[in-house]
Length: 305
Image (tube, rainbow, N blue to C red; front, side, top):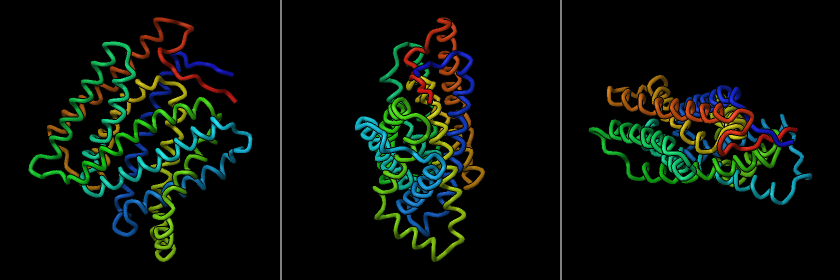
C-alpha cells in the first residue's frame, strides 16, 4: 500500500540522514588506514563485498519475483554505488577528507537546486554552497590541491547525484532492504578485478580484516540502509541539502581520527552548512504542517510490505 510521510515523521527522517552522514564519514576515516595496503579501489571493492554478504544473509532478497523495471533500477543503483565510492576513495587518497566531501557534495547540491520549486529552498542551497566554498578555500590555503584528487571528487559528485535518484526509485519499487542488498552485489561484482587482489592481501594479513569489516559496516551497510529509509520519507531536494552535513561530519572525523586541524574559517563554513541543513528541514516541516493530512511537497511514496 502506498502511504506518505506526515509532519511528525520529519524529525525521524532527519535523524536517519544525520545517522547516515556520521556513520559514512567515520567509515571513510577508517578506510584511509587501509589504502597503503589494499589501494583505494581494492578497499572499495572489499568494503562493498562484505556489505553485500551481510545484507544478503540478513534480508534474503527474492530476486526471482522482481520485474524488469525493478531489476533495471537496482542495477543502475548498484553501478552508481560502485562508481561513486571508487572515485571518492581515489580522491580521498590525494586530498583531505573534508575537502573531498565538500567537492563531492556539489552533486547533491546541484540536484537539490534543479529539483527545488520554492525560492526559500534555493536560498538555503545558496547558503550551503557558500559553506562548501569556504571549506574548499580553507583546505587549500598554503597547500595546493592535487589536481587528480579534485577530478576524482568531481566524478564522485556526479555519481552521488545519480545515486540519490536511483536510490529513491529503488525505495519506491522494492520493499524492504532487498534492493540495497542486490545493488551491493552488483557494485562489488563490477569492482571484482580490484576486489580479488584485496581479498588475497587480507587473507595473507588477517589483522586487516578487522578494519575492512568495520569500514564495510560504517561506510556501507549502516549509512545506505538509513538513506534508503530516509529517501522513502523525504523529498529528494530536502534530502540533498540535508546532506550538507556530510562535510561538517567529515571535518570532525578528520580532526578526531586523522589529526586534520580545524581553523576559524572551517568553523565558519560548518556554521553555514548547518544553518542550511536546519533551515531546509524546518521549511519542509512548516510546508507539511500548512497542509495537514497531505503529503510533503514532492514527497516520495513509502511502500509498505
